[in-house]
Length: 195
Length: 265
Image 1 (cartoon, rainbow over the protein chains, first blue to last red):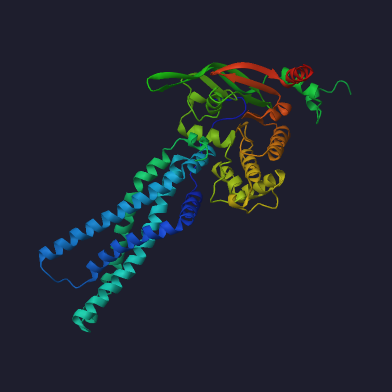
Image 2 (image 1 turned 120 degrees about the horizontal axis):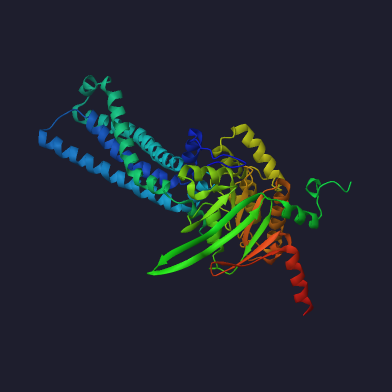
């Protein structure tokens, strides 16, 4: 559109602002954030334990473990969904205001997803440590020192990466819907009165 | 020095100020037959009905009217927050209806400053971060944004509270941050939605004076919806709205005469 005094430009997404917004949002809701992280940790610890534990038992037993793991992950994913939905609805006015100031949909979308991904990563780290520790202790109790010879340090980094990946995937999936709602929120929400 | 045009005088007397406005052909906001209809429970509500209006560059406009008169709707249409059902809104000759979502975001960032009734300071950020945020969105380098943010906060009288969070600020101080934030990107217009409604009389008065000061200093058009009659004294023009229509538009000098007439009776 031509104008006598200026021309319409385009705003660019600045990664450092996405990062800053995700971090500040996490900080403000730290207690609840910690709780959510804990559920992710539990699920990922379970998964880690299944991965590092010496493969024993028959096929059906391992299948039922796998089913439990998936259920566990889904439950923690729903936990993330709930937490992030709350985080978004609590910030209706704030998100509206940020949009009035020129915040793009993508900024809101990515910062919310990043917030969840950080949760997933931290939860994954705690979960991986817990999982390895529990698996190791349990195996030690069952088989004694022989475990040390079978313990594969080569496979461990790969297993940890898999656990991180799956943890982050489920948390980000849980956050996808709230992030979308936040991103599409009209800036006029900022005009709403105090509630 | 009688040949010097009034517009070049740094502090023009009030009468010259109006004279200069009349000769000005530049306008910042123009609405053409703007209507906004809502359907509520099967009934169509005409929140705005064919509102046509021109606001000149640098003017201070107050919109008055009872709640439900359509002033907030008009306001939102001008601010690019609501799309009118029909009619056009132009800001500096740019038709808002022609803009896509990205361009509207740019317009909100660079050309419009918003001041809200409930301040809407981002709670998780300091006063300075709140003021620099729109500048960072606009692509101003962080160091420059910091410097400008500090200068703006000093200008609104919060030089010693730059790193305070909203929790540590009073309502009036939060509204000052909001004013600094609204003027951060040197916008074409600043829209203020009942900025003094949540403040006590004295603080409200200070906020009004500050908005007027920023309006004059930066030459930014200010449009303010209000119930507050103290606003009349500093407005260039006052628009009264009723039932989605403009009831009356008056310049300040005309209103003053009426007030003094009222007092005589």
